[in-house]
Length: 248
Ligand SMILES: NC(=O)c1ccc[n+]([C@@H]2O[C@H](COP(=O)([O-])OP(=O)(O)OC[C@H]3O[C@@H](n4cnc5c(N)ncnc54)[C@H](OP(=O)(O)O)[C@@H]3O)[C@@H](O)[C@H]2O)c1
Image (tube, rainbow, N blue to C red; front, side, top):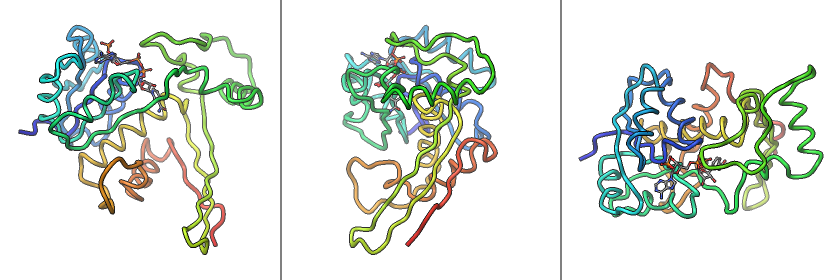
């Protein structure tokens, strides 16, 4: 029997805690029920205590104990998994017998935060410049080889920004569109965790456009414009903005 709209598995990790904090203070909090899940009950209790007003149920489930994973999934309308390294542990909730709707934050192995921000010296320099602004900044350094539970420092999570231009062409080649997507917050962790939270809410609140077929889908294909609308509205419109640059 489904007990929760959303079960967040791997909630005790760096990314998982960010998703938990986002859900805990979400303005639509009264519209969904949720639980935090993981293998370590003490860490889960500490996380719940840190969530102040929210008090999600705790579910203990370990990937080495398959029945515990099946029991967790059977209680969930939507499973969000940030257990990782994803390639090793994240798939278990997705592959549980009673699959409903699972969202997985995937990362390649070997994966480190530093790799994500050092694609080319120009990008790295630009990134740090954007993050630090024009003034002098003294803050925690970026860990080059993050350990489990460690991500970017607070200042980078908050001061980071992202901006991408996307071009899509129809299969026939007849139509093309270029869009500009920008947002605030470090895209590797803080922004990603908010996007993951909104994807979960789309599914949990039944707001997705019906996908044309099943299987493993990207968020855009599965959720369509509903997700864009949620993201554009998140944090009073301050989080992400979408603009059409050209359309033919
Ligand atoms: N796509 C993206 O943009 C993006 C961004 C960030 C992260 N990621 C991916 O997200 C995943 C998590 O990253 P993170 O930085 O949050 O890592 P992390 O801080 O090391 O957290 C790992 C989480 O997985 C849990 N875990 C580890 N081994 C487990 C096992 N055997 N069974 C059950 N749970 C287990 C940990 O539980 P304990 O607390 O009990 O140790 C913890 O909750 C990684 O795969 C990473 O690549 C992707």
